[in-house]
Length: 72
Image (cartoon, rainbow, N blue to C red):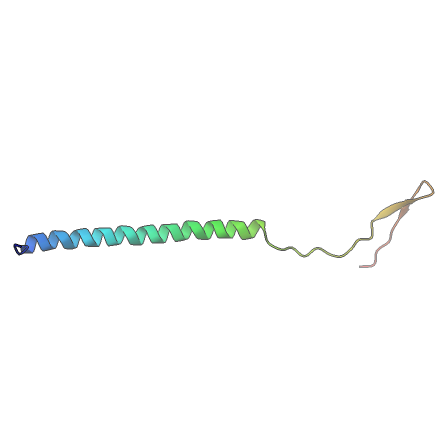
């Protein structure tokens, strides 16, 4: 095999640098898009604490509305 000249080594090095840069940019952008999807998932599926107040504000008794007073 023939030895590669200095210009050919420079071209190979440029190609390696470009491929490495493209790989790095792809990794950075794919991570950012995945983080946005994960954040969107947790915004829609987060656990929200609901108060245990099951007593209604009013109810009916003998065809009359009875209002409930709540101490908070």
